View (spheres, helix red, strand yellow):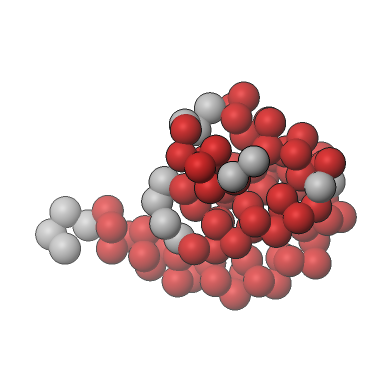
Length: 89
């Protein structure tokens, strides 16, 4: 399965749950979804973030070692989001 192409289909909960199931079968899928999330390419990163969030709810121990990375990049992502949402910019 091409994860990037699958995320392009739509943002449905069903598709997110399908990817969570795939991650549970193969942790390499997690790595792919994680990288897409970090790319900050809307809407794919948003969809990938949802998949990571749903997986983390079920398996918090798996995401816990990556929290420092999320905390490190969060301020830049918020700034980028504000820039995209600014009607004058």
